Image (cartoon, rainbow, N blue to C red; front, side, top):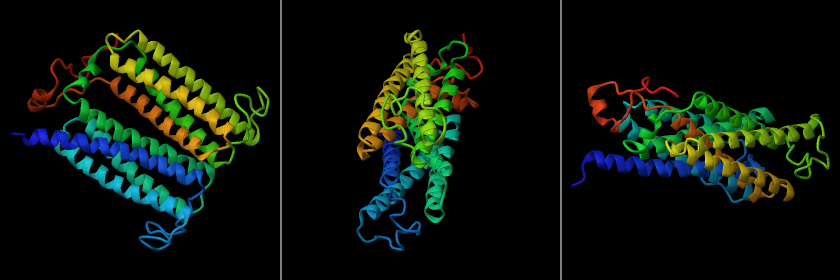
Length: 327
């Protein structure tokens, strides 16, 4: 007979998988709203659409309304996941961090969406929306990773790392976050086609940093630097693959995704902002951020159990936080 603990674990994993997929869909639908110019599809009303629960048909209205509808479903999934995670694993520091973060960013996303509908915003403010969406996705994804790895693969986190690896991983994550913001700013400032060719910019190797061309060119240079930094992370984990296969796989996935991201950026230019190319660009960078977030998560050791009961739940061979030293 299935025990309540086993049922709770299965329910948590199913909810986590559904919420992670749902958050990815919400993010892609938000990008669809932006890239089709459907932000005003529901007029100035929120959370209703043109003052109605079910608005009349128009393409921009349906795009915006569908985004809001899917977001409402995702909100229910996240709240349910938060309740289940806290019910079963509230003693774990990961849950104490990831659960409040995913709930907070969920409501922050909704608030920013309402603000964008009710009040005009500049490109700098609009660009921040995608960054919040990435944080929301990463927090849900890492919650799912914790639930799936609890008592199993998470024990890899206590294996030793070279000096500086954690700083490199977290610094890289922060850099990619800033890079994503710059990319979103390029889109919202209508500078996406300031460079009409790729890899050159208007036929030049160095077009300068002034005006929209400078914004687009700066994003390209920053993206190149990010790709080299991720390649460096992967090269580092090659030497660790025997003891830390988790980091080797995650960084390898990140390298593959950043190469795909560069190619999708070229396609965005070549197709002149075709909707499928722009959505692919947004989707790939979301997965890239998730892979790097997972790398940072697994670069941290397991927390030290605080009670005897928690100690009995800890994975076999776990090393308390503070006793794991980088070598």
